[in-house]
Length: 259
Image (cartoon, rainbow, N blue to C red; front, side, top):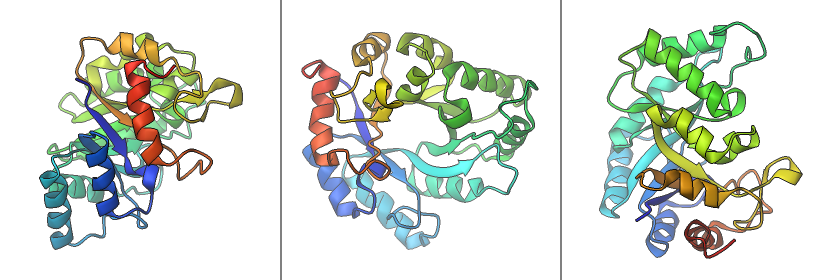
């Protein structure tokens, strides 16, 4: 059976009570927790607040797939990666979501200066939780992310980085789901899903209203046990339906009942 999670980006600003109710009423088994000052998850939480948050999520039978930071691993400026890794460890999360966001990605140099900074940060990171590299921004294509991960394997062989596959981003870069999965599988942790409209610059749309090839994704993942997580970008796209409508539609979409 598919394990489905969702990101709290889809209900940004909602209380933990609301998130747990959404999970309970929609057969959700996991969460991605958006980490920001306007959310109930952020690096400023006290030790007691962290213990309570972990206990309530655990008691609800939910797994925290990721603390979703906005750390730019390639950035020149200092990045609060350690703070987010500490938070993730104390919450019992599998890892911290980061972006590479490499400003040097247009150069022919490999690795770029930004990728070298990213490798240094991965090298310095503790190994109790994963650094989760999302296919996003400069490394949206699975081919680009896989190339970086091969560099990590060669230069930082004991690294603790894995990949979050934003399947809509790789598709928007011309890769089929099967192609992206083959490239990313050696490092893959879980798969983010959403429907998008290629005629509108791959903007997220209501589940079933776009043209993301979800049937191809299902076929590519057949026989594999990766988590799926709905990254419902309601905060950035307020025209989308609310999460309590998107979650039931997602189950139908995944099962093939909604085409």
